[in-house]
Image (cartoon, rainbow over all chains, first blue to last red):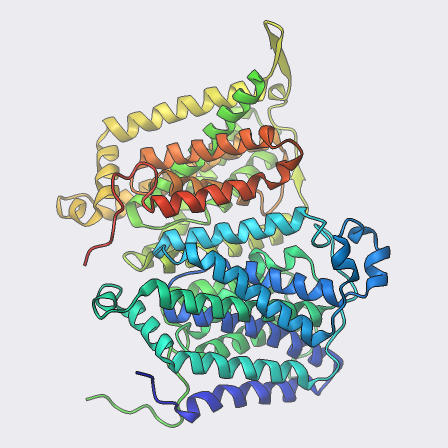
Length: 339
Length: 290
């Protein structure tokens, strides 16, 4: 009971992401930064899509997994001599001071961290439905924030971890993102993914067919926790620094907006949403900085960007709550007329 | 010790008021209004901006502004969402909340605005050798008076009857002739007014108003209505009170570990939700029926 793999559904989004990366990223140093941070956010959006999109259960808690991923990867890639001497890390556990890993082992660690935290908390959280689930995942984010903000034995506390190694090559985040997209798509068409969507469509009929809602949700939650861990770590390495506030409410809001604006139920929706929000954000940023767009300078006051993004989320939900793509996968050509 | 209990009761009272505001709106339209935070914030800004006026005038101003803002939210955004999935409405209100925060940032600046409001409340007095802060006593009195007034409104008036009816079964209430638009609008207006009271107490305690001023209290009040039971107004207020009081007591009990008070609080919430998804006051685990 799997869905047929339709190559265009997979290749369409991948080609768009790769094309975007090369078209923007190779232009300038600033373009490179835009591409890398967009990809890092996109991985997080994909994580949300795996769980929220497929299960229909809201999660505000994924920022917690991103936090764990980012700090796990950040702490082990910060060189020991920096950890010994920097003021904000003086209370760190000694084994963390001495632990040094390369970029890729640290990303594996981030994925594991995200998966473990999601898997354990999921055992409890997946029992809940609807609003209770939304509030409980919010509580999870609150706990993670509270712990990382105050505990300076496992991280920098309220301070920032500085001097994280960046990605060496332009292609690295691109390849990582494509791998995640592949995994997300394969999960979507797998038996578990399909069953999960069945529980989303009808939470009463699905158990009647012998589906354990808790079990399929838990699988998706754990997988999406792993991806969120990777997304958080990528975000940290692209920025070169990690601070607990970076993964709190604005981050949660931004990534959820991207998913919902695009259409949470499909890979194509997650892709379109991320690129659309990034594109609009960049254009508005250029307007705020009074840079010419196609030769025209429009001046906007600072802060307009955030307002427009929040406004477009609200308008999008009021106007079309399934997002731009209506949650459909990518398809070439004209839509067929239904009989 | 007495001061600790008074603090717990007064914080509990404030959170009960905030939770009641959220619970009213949730009752009539299943909306968890995250943007309640921005109602508290705008009322606080109003208090600070009008501090040169007599206190009563400035409080009336803030009540009016917050109620108007609540009404606008309902007319512009939430009205179109009636009957949609609660999760969708929650995200919309999250969006409205961020939107308003950014608007405040543009209008008032990101840095805190401050002014001394009701300075007579910041002192302390001694009763039988025990020093007691004025603020805690005033807060308790205020909370009790308003909770009693709300109790009267909800239990004894026609509007209250309609609110209770709508909270337990909105469809049936409509069929029996409750005017939904008017009822929902009045729930929003009352929640705005309650937000203004919460704002007043908070501004007296901490007159540094920034665009995120109302956020923390709203998050905890949200937790409160979930804990108490979202389907009854009494449950909301009780839940809010419990959250505030427990948090205040945790701060005393945990000593040096008090920075983790929030974590303990949230863990308690998750456990309560697992045991009683419908809240403390729910008699049975409610399950949505087809």
